Amino acid sequence: MVKKSLLGKIAKAVVMASIPIITMFPKLNAQTTFEINPFSQPNDTTLSYYGSGDVDLNNVRDWNDHNLISQGIQNDQADIDGDGISGTSEDAGLFAKYLNADTLLPQINWANPNLKTEQRKDWVKKMLAIDKTNEIPPVQSYWMCGQYSTQTIINFHGFSELKDSTIASKFPKYNLDNLGRFNLPVYQVGISWGEPISHANNAVLIGGNPLNFYDYYFFDVSRNDKEVVIGDVLMPENSKVEINSTRFMGSGGISTYPFVKFKFDEEGIPSLDGDPSQYLILQCPVNSIKPNKSNLLEKFVLNQNYPNPFNSSTTIDYSIPLEDKVKLQVYNLQGKLVKTLVNEKQRQGEYSIPFDASGLSSGIYLYKMETSKGSQTKKMSVLK
Image 1 (cartoon, one colour):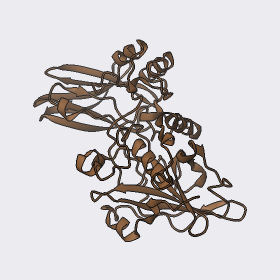
Image 2 (image 1 turned 90 degrees about the horizontal axis):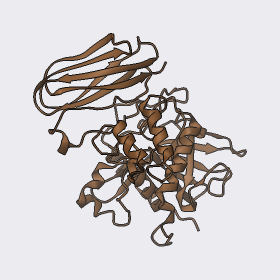
Image 3 (image 1 turned 90 degrees about the vertical axis):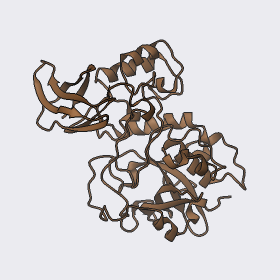
């Protein structure tokens, strides 16, 4: 028996009232094109990462981490290939390629447009195999499709408000231990095919266009992570499909709002059902590993640029423990200075510096940060 998802019962007025940003992004039409993988607004900060490579948890991914992976360390951050087994030779090999700028780590480069659809789908499948949400006993009166869908969203996203113990206590039916574990954008999906029949599952946008039905990967954790396609028992030809974003409110309620709706004709051909929501945006927030506040004042840190590799622009983050003279410069592999990004005295704190490489050719470049405490140099890769 299929019951209506609890997520679908939230009143529209409540949903709209819970969204603070409603006017920054205009409505889109079917002709809109997308350059990168979009999220829905507002985005929540991811709090933890899986398979990031930062094994020693010093907010830097380097060859020291690679040595630990090669030694077989049992650490979630060492599971680079996402197969649930940490510190394998495959993990070490993939991470070495990443450090040499020969490959991407899909989990921390999800927004990179160079990733192919099948790569994204394969990564989602690997994460689902580790997730284990589908092993929760399906008690009819308690754990239904809506709860499965919501638990999956919690596990994949990072919702900062749910880390608050007061708010977390208002969601006793959900396990928050894996909050944001996988750092991937997972959406709640509502499928209906005649009142009052409906079902909730999940979707990930693995393509580049959220207005294209086939750019989504639909799955149902309540049925052992089964892929859901048109013609499936829970997505028949006469269905309507809503891709929703989820918000957790301090009151203990859950609100969803659809940003894209699809419908199928008698032959199962999907098309947009009305205009896309104003909440659908073109800019994908960057998910990056930030220095922990508790460690911020202990030493100066130069982080890996993000995204990396990149086409025309990237961002370099760093932090300094005390006021100091900071110089940040970019060089080519021949040691020639390409650009000086920073050359001034700066106060203690964190900084994010954009770098425009639109005039550079493809290749590996070095960026070097110098302070009175020493210097650090890292590689970045430009792909045209």
